[in-house]
Length: 158
Picture 1 (cartoon, one colour):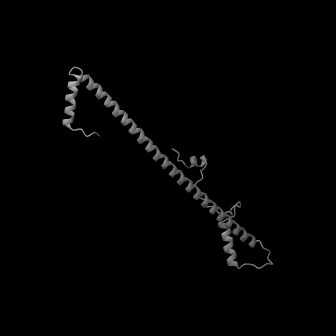
Picture 2 (cartoon, helix red, strand yellow):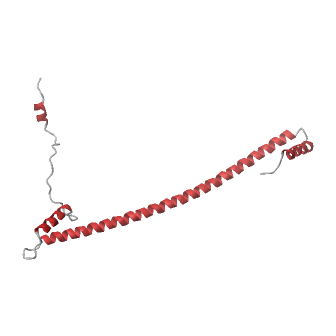
Picture 3 (tube, one colour):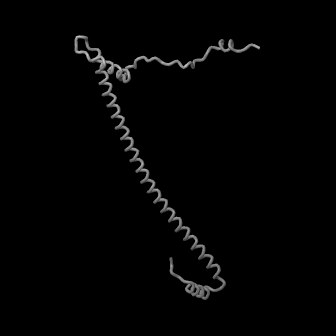
């Protein structure tokens, strides 16, 4: 901070001893030390306040960056959801068109049997929105509970 060497400090101490006197010099040195300590604490407090403000500004910038990224992700997800919904609606429309083609009267041109089976299989796999899928047989896993009467009959008697 200050470019003061040891010899210069020695000259200042000798002048202070001559001017102030040996009786008051210790009291003046203590007061001067206390004032210098207060000044150092004040400077450190100001430095820490400035550092906190800088950190707060960095956090605000980081927060705005994350908010922008979150908005971008939200917009992307919304756009993708709309694309999926549009694709689903077009699939439903095409499947309902296949179902209408199957319901045409017998006097009109019929599709070949192989193509008709493919269309029926597609309609079963992908039902239109609001329609229930065709009933499919379910496998019996045998996980139902048996009545308590069967359990007592199977228990060995003592």
